[in-house]
Image (tube, rainbow, N blue to C red):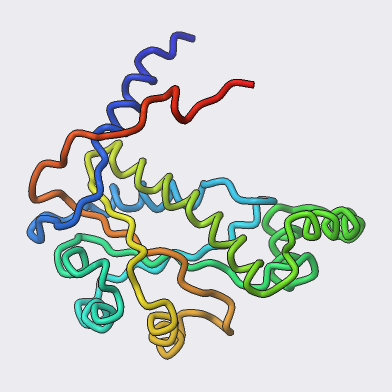
Length: 219
């Protein structure tokens, strides 16, 4: 199969995408297009297929106003974006956690006896990655949310929708706000990253990147 056209289309998509600091508040993403963006996140790969994420779509003006004092990196995106998403990372994702057992045996349909027999293999995996604390487990989940984040932003750019990933926020304060609203479950999640979607109000700059020979090494 000749992949030339597909390659060109994807490179065009990557060149189109840029970190949109301010959106046109009058232009809204259609429901169909935003569902497509969410689907790109839902279908993203994760370690063990565990999907350690949740997507909170913040459309309420009131809720956005509550977030604003604690999200300095989103000062222009919160009021202007069409859709604003908080990506949460699942906490405490251990081999014997209720979520892991349910997900592997019910969602991924692995027979319970097979899953139960994988205990030693999981123990080695966790030891090798030093997943030996609540913080380490949360960081592991958060790393995986960025796979979904990247796929959602690329999918958006592919259909002409702009985006901006946001890490400038007060983590504890936002988590407190989400907990008060009952959005973190039974202390199951923590905020990982924010991302805004909409339509740019001005053109982005030409991309500047290091040359390929600086970053790719064939060994």
